[in-house]
Structure formats: structure tokens, C-alpha cells
Image 1 (cartoon, rainbow, N blue to C red):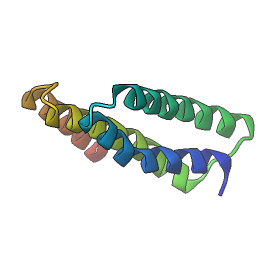
Image 2: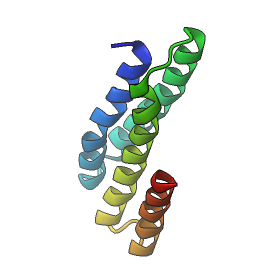
Image 3: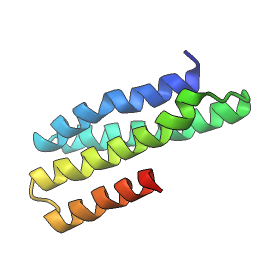
Image 4: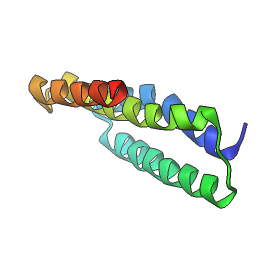
Amino acid sequence: MSVPNFLTAFRIFCAPFLYVYITMASWDWALFLCFLCGFSDFLDGYVARLLRQSSKFGKIFDPVADKILVSTLYFALYVKNEVPFIFLLVIFLRDVFLVLG
């Protein structure tokens, strides 16, 4: 597995932990994990361009990993009553329309 694909898989793997940290109100860990995932997103794109690597896995799962993380983040915030349902609905519908488009 190439480094960019590993970083993409890492972000997908982190989503359940992000949910747990937010719902347990472990805000420091949740923020750290968000930062780590954001940095890995930057790094996977940078390394892929630097090494001129491209794969079907990366083309499909890089945006999927981003959507999983964002959806998990907002769902967890909704569960903690930090964001209203309408906000969660807008985020989910936006992602659905992006995938369908």
C-alpha cells in the first residue's frame, strides 16, 4: 500500500475515535484527532503529487474519507446537542448531492 493510500485509510480508521472523543466530551483529544486527520489529508495529497502516485483507491476513497470524517464530526456534535438537527441535515444532504453529482 502506498503512503498516500495508507494516510487515506488512516483517516477512515480515525472516524469512530473522533465520534467517541466528542461524545465523551474529550475535547482535547477530539481537537488533536481533527488536526491529525487534517494534516494527513494535506500530507497524502502532497506526497502523491511529489511521488507522482495515483491510484483508483485514492481517487475514490480520498474524498470518501473526507466525507466520513466531516459527517462523523457533525453527527457527534448533534448527539452532544452542540449543533441543531437542521445543520446536520444540511451537511448530510450536501454530501449526498456531491456524491450523486
